[in-house]
Each structure stands twice: as structure tokens, then as C-alpha cells.
Image (tube, rainbow, N blue to C red):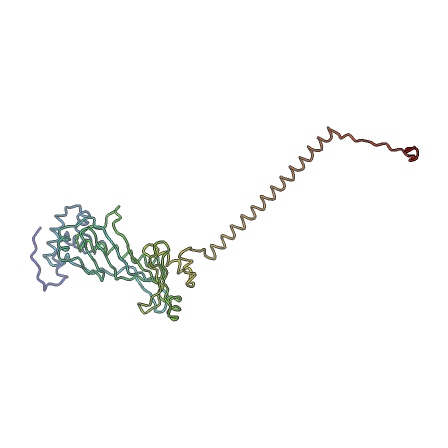
Length: 332
């Protein structure tokens, strides 16, 4: 393959790409994410192309010399799933304040060099702290949607692309099939423009509900983003708490009952009553059959008793009485 000269900085990006061979364009598409929708790490490119890691690194060096690729940070592309429409004044869910702890599967020399220069970097407004075996991500992203499931979908789409980018940025492997090395340690869900939070703020009150098992803060009211918010903050129970709160839009004592006991809805209660009524009808039918059976047994016992009495008749004593009884004669 003919060696290309290094392109000057004055050359346009369009002219850069025209100088590339087809194989160089293929590698560039994989490394930048234009082919797959997200950038691949050198290890992933090697696996995709069926070549050695050394061959991939050689190609990356050529692309860097041509000025069309940099191993440094690249801003994440916009999500294909829109976060809108969110209209002012309408209630919606805001997922935020996430903390991820990641155990590194593999790291190279570049990562070790980064550790020696410092352990804190900023990528896409997320604070990253790096350690020899772990990476912590303190998110400043917000995912807004009509309900919890939609907000979770937006977050999942974003974080999968971000983790790919993080692998490329730090020269590490954190995504590997069969490994459970990525843990979500903290997450908050806010019901924005919540009526309960608004009433409590007007009354100069704050809602704070703690979990009865571990004592961690579970539900709060907040006005930090210039909107009344009812937040669920428990590390493991926040999603389910917010779903229940949205399902039961009630007051404080009902919220505690909801998150602790998860009482049935009206439709669920109706189904329970229908099942109970059906059981009662079945019980009455069984009692009726039992009464008929007892009546039949009673008749059979009476027949047996009558048969026994017929075989063994009772002896009756007869007392003879004189018709003309003379008392004087009796005492004379």
C-alpha cells in the first residue's frame, strides 16, 4: 500500500477523507462510530476485523498522522430517542444523580499513565474518577420522560454509548459478555411539578421518609430546580417507589403506606372481592350438600332403629283393678 504524506492543517476535512484508502475508511468508521453507531475500542476493532491488536494500532497511528482521527475525547452524538416534548407546567419524570461503579476487565499502558497524572477527568459533563481496578462515574445527565420506563430506556441508550466511548478514551475494557462488573450505586427519580410537593412548600413543610429496613432516605420533596419535585432516592427501591407514587397520587400518610405495604388498587381490590364472593358461594354450596348428606344418614339411622325395635318388642305389665272395691271389707 502506497504511503501517504502527512496532510497539512490547512487541508479541509473533506480533502482528508478523499486521500484515504477503502481499508482506512473502514477502520475510521469503526473507530469513530460512523459505521456501528458508537465508537469501538482497538480490541473490539481487532475482533471485528479478525486481525491482531498490533495491526489495529498501526492503522490508528496512520490515521493520526493523516490528521483524521484522534484517540482523545469525542463528544457523544445526540440520542436517536428524543427527550421532548416536555412542556412547562406539565408533570413528568426526571431521572438524574446517577453514580456508577465499574470494575475494569482489562487496562493498558495508557490507563496506567493516566493514573500517574491524576485520577479525575470530565467527559460529557460527567465526573470520572479512575483507580487501579475500578472507575467511578458521577453523572450530571438528566433523562426526562412521561414515565419511569421511558426515562430508563433513554438512560440505557445513553450509557451504552458512553461506556463504549469510555473504553476508547481510557484504553480499557469494561463491557464483556457474562461479566457483572457495572453497578448502579445511586439513582434519583423526580416527579416534576408534583402537587403534593407544591402544597407542602406552600405550608413551609418538607417531606422526608426513611426506609424502615436500612434507614436510608427514600422519599423527599425538593424545589432545587425551580420546580416542585417529589423524589424517590433509595439506591435499590427508587424506581418501584416512583412507579407507585405515580399510580397513587395521594397525601403523605398514604405515600408511606404505599411504599411500605404496596396496597392494592381499586381494580385489584374489586378482583379480590369477586374472588372472595365466589369462594363464599362455593362454601355455601358445599354446606348445602353436607346438610343433605346428614339428612340422608339420619333417615338411614332411623330405619335401623325401627328394625331393631321390631325384632325385640318391649314387655308391658298389666295391672288388674277390681271394679267394685269395698274398703270396709278390706280393713275388716
